[in-house]
Length: 187
Image 1: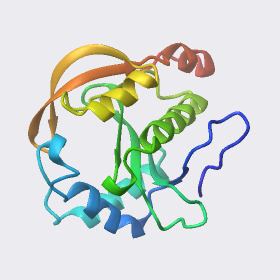
Image 2 (image 1 turned 180 degrees about the horizontal axis):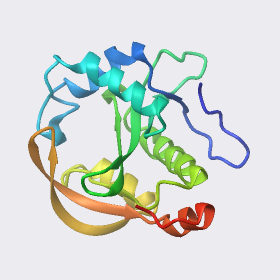
Image 3 (image 1 turned 135 degrees about the vertical axis):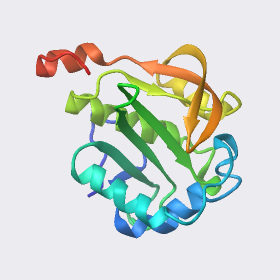
């Protein structure tokens, strides 16, 4: 189901949960050399159907927010990209990442969609501080972090799909809101 803008929310693209039929989008995003240039190159096509199925399960279980960016709500099958928020259990932190297909870039979709997912996370009150790790050279994604109020902690190396990436480490701290809403310390 798509989230629709309300008077309290900024206007922007519609968002909907990832669905089994989104394999074609995953292939375009994850297996394309241009799209994956800042993430160490394209991923293999093999295993993408399983990745979509796993992501659909994560959303159904409430373990991640994986939102597809729908630029025109009248055409829900047209997807411009995605925003994913998940809990990295190994690092014990919440992370967010986004991607927008080339033909939709430069329209502010990543910023508006990421802002909406952060808003959803705050409303749920269980995600705490949210970390982002855009590649150092990815000016657009670093700009999204800066414009949404993330704090730059510095540079770090991140393992993504077995590849070491040189990233900026950003965080937006929502821990006080999470603690107040459920009485528990963030994990």
